[in-house]
Length: 461
Image (tube, rainbow, N blue to C red):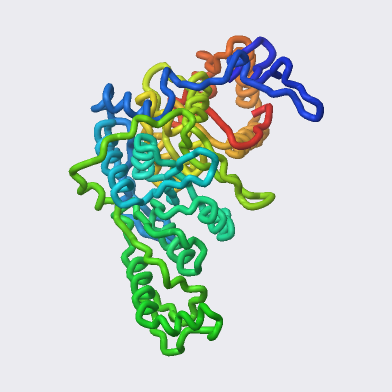
């Protein structure tokens, strides 16, 4: 994104005639001063991209993951896990099959009822709330090819934010992992997300039947004790009867406030949809102006705001990434940034659009280097904080080096930087071999391009 010159790299220039009183110029990528991008390689929507790959690259393996074996679960995370050396891969053909089953399930079960509350948009919304998982990619493909808008949720924003997101969207269905399912069930019981009707568990191997049993136990008990519950809801009593039993988790039911007795929350395993034989046809009439996703802000100054991102928005970002990140050969990428954030979803869709290998990390942040060493990515993405931290550690370590080692590093760094500014090429045959290749191996040894977004990054980095 930008023109490489001898002394500087330009990322944006002011648009002529765009200055107005009280406002700055409109800035635009120097490569696109003549007009905004509305297509990516003649594709108008993500549905077009998926269709092309389904038809032309059916047997190409692109979506990878590997199982955790011998794992101990602690606070919803796997620890002491032994990672299988063997990676499992889905081809475009397999993704197509699963996407059809998911899209059909969402249609036939009315998981995404149509909303017509904003301008002329006809929105069908489905939520996601999960750590990075292959099922989220299958769902993303289904949404893109059936005209459904995804809404990622993340509880790090707090209960108030979750309540706000459900109030704005009226979502009835959320695809989530088991820890998130437990939280959503608790939110639902407290009346925080009254529109929620369906929780789809994205990984069968993680299904915690205790959560389902606890919810069903409470629901059934409340159903048979309606008078007491209704008194509580009307404010005529402060608690449920002291004789109320404990649920399977050991929690006294009469200690639970704000109980919703009108709903009927359902838990469904995603594998139930793999049994579908007759599938609905894809909706390849999705247009560029249709909404691909809602991206909620962090809400640091107020409640989170939902940015409505169209398919054209994604196409323009693809073009920008392609200008920077096109590898000489196969594109390989390890997914460890949260898929709830739009930065990672752009990376995911870009890699899968160009028949690259998109490998989902093992779920343990401290051990992501194992996946990097195994996949040997050509494209690496992270947030500025990561790059700033690594840069600081490298220079702190450099200061401790002595004599010739420090001099070699400084000379090599100066030579590579000079070549980058002069030619735009980040490699240097001599100094890479002598000094930098060992550092490069930390990310697998094959990274050609690094990309960053979401916040400012230091100029020297």
